[in-house]
Amino acid sequence: MIQTDLLIIGAGPTGLFTVFEAGLLGLRCHLIDALAQPGGQCAEIYPKKPIYDIPAYPEILAGDLVERLMEQIRPFRPGFTLGERAETLEKGEDGQFTVRTDKGTPHRAPVVVIAGGLGSFEPRKPQIPDLEQFEDRGVAYMVKDPEAYRGKKVVIAGGGDSALDWAIHLAPLASELHLVHRRNEFRGAQDSVDKASALAAGGSIRLHTEAQVNRLIGDHNGLKALEITHNDPAKAQTYVEADAFIPLFGLSPKLGPIGNWGLEIEKNAIKVNNAYDYQTNITGVYAVGDVNTYPGKLKLILSGFHEAAVMCQSAYQVVHPGKRYVMKYTTVGGINGFDGSKKEAKKEVVRAIA
Image 1 (cartoon, rainbow, N blue to C red):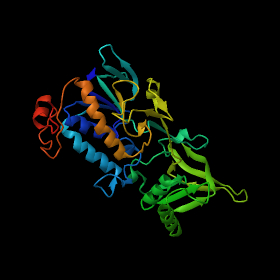
Image 2: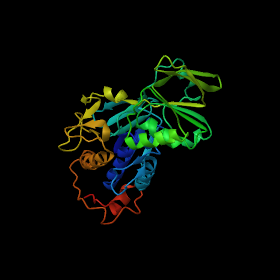
Image 3: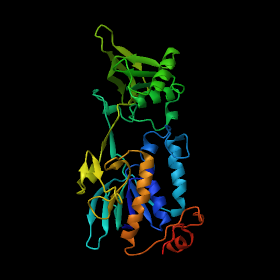
């Protein structure tokens, strides 16, 4: 049984920053995430994409933001259960919650913080026969490592920002890059459309518009080629040699098992009390970041950071009922030397616990 003060469901940016805010109050944290590494979407889906609305960073790559957050929380020594999904929630007579994962790992804490972003994601898959047969053998629904496509023949399908951005990014790496879209007009940012068009004019991207991939060709070793059908029946089908096919039609967010915990849900998000502490309808269970909803909600990483800071003040009272604390700013003494123990927390934490 893993025992902690705050059990955080989700190790994305908001979940990680919650560790920092809780650590300043001397609270121990443990995080559960279905992904194999911390960082959430930023690490798993778009680690190389820039983010522009993080204070003090005019531009920072999503993966770099995760690294900075991990560095920031290192002094507080959080625990991690990775590669496991939070499955069940039970509240005992003593007020402690027990959360078990899909692998049966039990966790116990007086406070549960749901920081699961938009929930678990499932890719929107195109209706292509035998598509699943080539998954992980040429077909991928996200780009984890751009270098894996160096010197490869790559086909990307889609007309949004992700398809355009990855086509632009992979064009210099791939030996051939084809971009297939069922319409003439793209839905992405105009700057990305212009860049992709320029690369197509120069021959770096082979553009197929008003077309779609309708058949994959390969064997037990993986993908070998694919067939592209044009909307105009007068045009012949096009066969393209391909080592990799990346259909980028977006992701469908789902709350998963959390949706069965008795929480008040509105439009696939968890309703919270934003007038006070971002607590859910279950006392002791909070929700911060993109997973929650309230009037005026902005789904931004920086909003999640704010919510985490406010929430931790309330969570402290749950963990230490009736205990007073005196808030001090981090500029007073910093956090150097904090080793995660309660003894050192009293010496080094910059929000003194009284």
